[in-house]
Amino acid sequence: MIKKFQNIFSIPELKRRILFTLGILIVYRIGGHITTPGVNPLALKVFFQNQKGTIFALYDLFAGGNLSRATIFALGIMPYISASIIIQLLQAVIPYFEKLAKEGEEGRKKITQYTRYGTVLLAVVQSVGISYFLLSMNPGGGSVVTMSPFAFRIITVITMTAGTIFIMWLGEQISERGIGNGISLIIMVGILARYPGNFLNTWRAIKLGQITPFRMVFFAVIMVAVVAAVILITQGQRRIPVQYAKRIVGNKVYGGRSQYIPLRVNTAGVIPIIFAQSIMMFPSTIAMFFKGSGIIAGIQTILAPGSWFYISLYALIIVFFTYFYTAIILNPTDMAENMKKYGGFIPGIRPGKRTSDYIDRILTRVTLPGAIFLAFIAVLPDILMRRGGLPFYFGGTGLLIIVGVMLDTLKQIETHLLMRHYDGFMKKGHLRGRR
Image 1 (tube, rainbow, N blue to C red):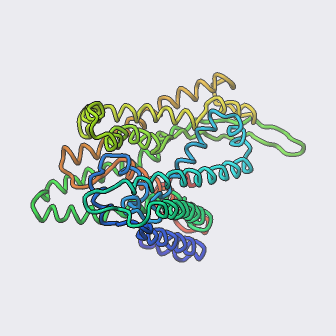
Image 2: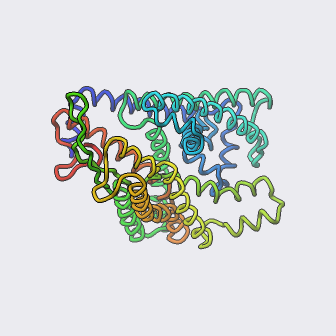
Image 3: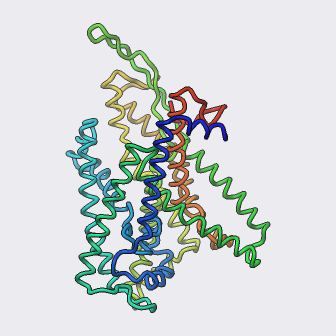
């Protein structure tokens, strides 16, 4: 393995890409420690210590902790992710966006441009909301805002919107000139930034006797097994063989080859967990603004994190959204029509509706274990922390993002190695998807 990493830095282009990516990520982390003008960070910290289990905690996870510190990157990359999801959903319901998605490279460029416009719009709206929210806070440690309200609103909107645009630009620079998916790497780095503090707190708990070494070893074994299972599910796919008939166009012969349609076990990725978390955290967030309401308090009690009702409902919502999102991003009818258009067919299945029904049936069956596994990963932190006594958050959205992003980055690095006749990371077997 040491030799493999030496090979990476022996290729000038790959070395330059990796160093460029690391430099961009360092810039992102530096910006994550610059507080927005007019904010008292100590008073803000007092408030966010009591926000576990609310939608603010979820947002802060994707922002890499920047929201809880009210930095210039407080919005993080979430406006871009939200805009991307909205555009993707619009492709399934609005013919114009559906047509753009089918226009190839030009259509993708227009969709990317619309996503950028949507990111700016959402960033402006969310920064306005954050400015009003910070002005309304007085958590006991003093006022959070230390300047006039009008000036603070203007500065906050400009600063945070510009910060989001800058992060989006950094991500695009990594994707173009670095290695890996830039947006995903930025999210992953923000999540990984929490781990050193978690490990330090765990070590302190062991020294104080709050956790026995035997229990910590038991937790470590579970973590390794869960990470291995996440890699297996992330890489897992059901391949449907497709045969293309020979076609003669002029003096050239097309087709006559065999391919396959890779249907992933986890096609939806982390989106179902994000949707489910937003729904389950909504009552706790609303309860902050209606503290005297008995109805809201009752709903909050029923949906208390850690209860079996909460865990069961959370898991069912994740399974539902897994099927829902998979149905949006994969359309068996379009896949069957494209195959028929280019002379492709599944052996033993008639082209057209029979092919569409066959793909839909396989997709429904393949998605079920992926949906169940997503639900398991999502509820795992509640079980380990509240039932097992683990002192830090492990599993959920963060683990899926880290594993997925690292696998994708390793695939790209291995592709560069193989292009220059170097061995990849593995002598036996290969990282799936590099062909």
